Length: 327
Ligand code: PMP
Image 1 (cartoon, protein in one colour):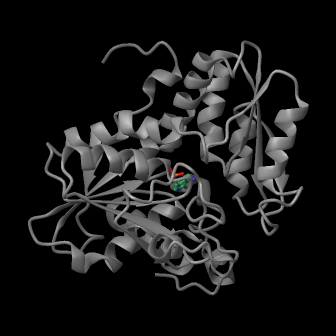
Image 2 (cartoon, rainbow, N blue to C red):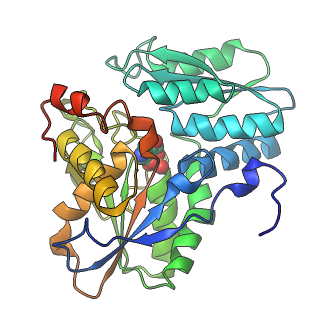
Image 3 (spheres, helix red, strand yellow):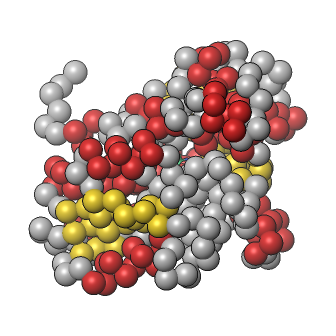
């Protein structure tokens, strides 16, 4: 192995790991693309660096500039690594729903963190969307990343995550299952895989409380679908430009409780201590199992690390407080 010149050079080339026990009852073979092996411990390192580099190329981000982003934490971590190596100031605007670990980690890597209320309309002046926009207009020489509508996000996955999955599977992949937030991961990977083989099915995992599934199935943006939920990183109350609805074959909703239970099972049965939304992806995989045939290969992408949820999903008291089963 060659020496890396800086931490950014360690992004990508994450392992594909066969799941053995957590998938009992599913007749297909299931493989996990485990993205917490990235240096910022999530898949978002890939798109964060791509967004920074594209903004440098287009001149939106200039030397000594300030990066401003609304982020649940993982994108912020990727941006922080980029900011450190490339010499930018970083301000992350996040919500009070995010775990304390994520905020502390961002601060540890030098980001300034501003916390906004979760349960306000996206266009409320205090929402994290509005606050990030306002800061970027107030601060001189700043650039608002906007991971939702910045298409460098899905492009990063089209250029790196998708090709890695295709190569690791030797082209033998029939289904791709992944949580959807900004839509960058599913749209970039999905587009790449469908260009290679348009028979591959792309399954998006959504939360109860999110607009994605209904919008995909009916074309209606139904505000009644929007209500608070606990799973972090997936589901939205807006329609990000990075969600390419045509590439996605189906959205499957998973409850907060099942997401938590499956995250805990994944840690115990496979030794993969992954994040809350990864539990949703595994729970969704089970809900969808009638679609997977024997001899087919399913890839599930696990977005981040469980270390960010030690005070939540991996804490028995927290589980009991939510009224969730411990198993
Ligand atoms: N899970 C977690 C923990 C995340 O941080 C994100 C990013 N919002 C997602 C899933 C969804 O990924 P994407 O934004 O690429 O759709």
